[in-house]
Image 1 (tube, rainbow, N blue to C red):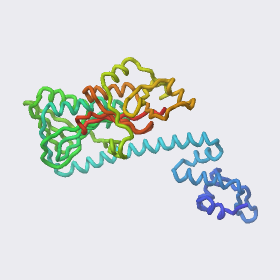
Image 2: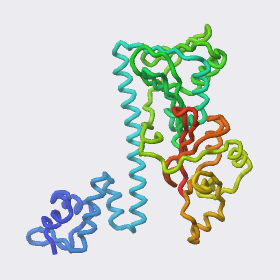
Image 3: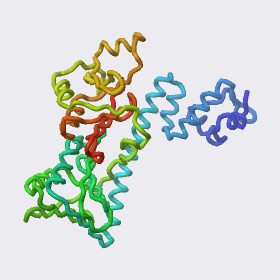
Length: 359
């Protein structure tokens, strides 16, 4: 038998915590001395006590700790998953509130203006390159937008719905400090229509606080930025984690035709229903091919050649090809769970990223 002090040293729980979990019925001593009230614990209570200590450190509620101590490991995994999801939701909400607070603080200071001038064609092309990746989930209103990142070199446009990311850059003459403006997609669509009409003429944008004013061919458009934090996407940028394993040139008409024709796919479960998955592989070192269920069956039978396989949403890939434009593109592949990048060979600043689907 172990005293309460010995169990505390063996598990990382304090003596007061062990007394609390005894009173709560979570970790009851094997024996309590009726004369002294001393608590004694059996050796087989060390592992449950260590589990309690770990669950306590991650903030699991006491009622769920009590359930976990008596449950099978699969149940504990589900409790942890649900708890982590709650924590992620709470963190996202805290970030949204923090963004609103920062906006309020910034509103109390005189805003400085940033002005940029670029052609309508450049701005329209940049919007067209990222528009397909704008989010539509009403639960994530901060993604129903396009981020404008203005630096002294020009402006970068970014859009994401968490499953895909698109980035495009446009050269511009910039005066004023670097600034980020998260514009709602409806406003961006209006700005694009005006830019289409401007052609090679100038589009003048002025960013002051939360206001973005566009002057295009005698028309003025006032837009208000969204008070949300845009996801930190920089870790997903091509090259952020080193050089990709493969750069594969792609004949876009061939690949687009194959995707539209319903090329062989495999089916995976997603959100309670079947999801068709397009599987990309390599024929040789630098030729893309599309794989079907028979190819993956060969993998499971041990007859695979060890080639790279990446699963993606075929519709998303088709959208990315259309947005990039041009008959030739480059796919950057780096493994089955690494984001897939789609690049234009003539414009390194324009690319899109698709999150892979685990095979």
